[in-house]
Image 1 (cartoon, rainbow, N blue to C red):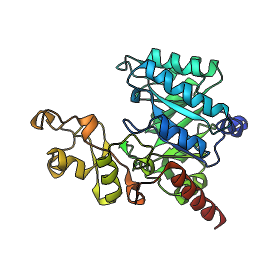
Image 2: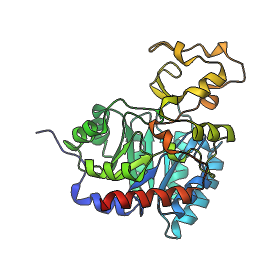
Image 3: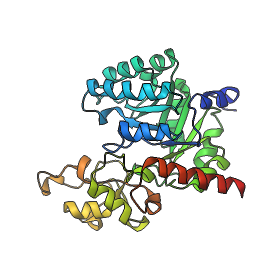
Length: 315
């Protein structure tokens, strides 16, 4: 039998520390998630995260965390910061120190091993969840001593996975007894209930909040999300070299023919207008984009999800 990691006995206790009224986390989204979105979600009883790099500097990150920590002290749901642990992130050490000063309840690691964050975060009493997209990476993360795992499955916005959540959760539960979060095409309360039925603890929702009033996304991005459905999503590795779900209309708008992209071959972005940036102008969304039918405040989105979740649970 394979070694087991995480604690089934402590699982509920760890989740209770996040104080979430809905078994979901609003996922961190690059250039989209900021303190307004996170604060609104927290006030609505739902955990939300933002990438530390959405703050322009560690000093700005400190200011964001001071504001969010005050809200958390007022018995709102916990909040989270997404830290890129890869050596290519020059701000990792400084941003981790800022999170430690603020005693951020949950750190979500991505694009690298969670190991560099664990001692610091667990040392002040925080939790570390690792973002992974294969069972092999999940096992490596579990061995470092993380508190929880976020399984990025097929259908997630931005950099995505390829596995079905049915298989992924089952694979991970063979060796990990701690909290498990599932990401990938989840945009309704019914889908959150389904994640729980799979044996996971929380759902990870990003796309559903792209067009929120409190989102940092530019107005055109929000309008495109509202107007789009599943047929507008393209999974390609030709933009960044890693498989990602992109909005076809945003590619066309930037001068990229979506149907000309070839898997395994990066598109030459130098052919585009020099003001076009792949990280800013080529927008991402997940398979659940069709559930976003209007711009609305975070509180309204969460209230709708909670009603759907309760209805699905009652069924």
